[in-house]
Amino acid sequence: MRHYQVSDLMTADPMTVTPATPLKKVAEILVTAHVGVVPVLTPQGRVAGVVAEGDLLRKEQLQRDPEGRHSAHLPYRTRRDIATAETAGELMNRYPAAAPAGTSVAEAARLMDRHGSHFLLVTGEDGRLLGVVTARDLLRVFLRSDAVIKAEISQDILWRYLGTNPVLVQVDVTDGVVRLTGKLERKSMLAAALRAVRAVDGVIDVESQLGYAIDDVRLAGRS
Image (cartoon, rainbow, N blue to C red; front, side, top):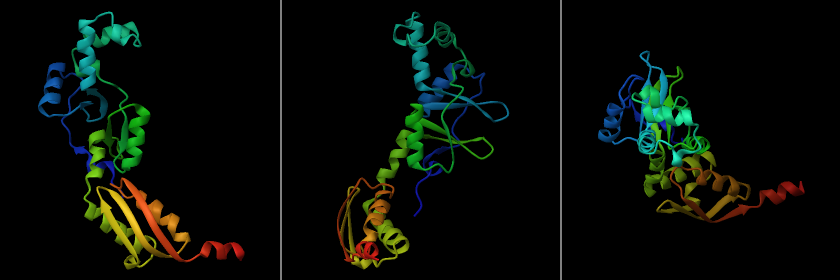
């Protein structure tokens, strides 16, 4: 059973700028490309930082409100630097959240939450930029069709992972909610089956009415 990774969902080879790029050009990219962030790369192709749409909005706000009443948590010098920034290098976040290409969707969501970010830069083993993945991109796992989810449960979990006959279990999926009825061979398989089904990308919830033929848990306890 293969889980989606950020490399499956990211925007590959995104538009980038250099530290010297004027902010007007950065804004143009954000608007015309319908993106929320623009990575900033050095002339050698290394990630120097990122400019998000929120950074430009904060600059506009501080220009109109030099005292920064709505940004009081920022030091005065930082507020001044933001307000007077003219290039991507002067405004960019130098420490953007990033993740390797093989990061799972679940781990990517945890990273975004930890960093308070709506995006991650996706990097290769050499640290070079491969793409950008956003919170909206991660939501695409919930767009998997019910038929695809059902097939993965029947083939990958029931047959390959648990080694049970899929005919013994009825799998119904409606809007991502999985309903399991039927009977497994052993009681010990129930917990493993539910954990595996819940981990399938796109599953919203699992409702189980599964039974079992042999209570191997009790037998093991007696022995």
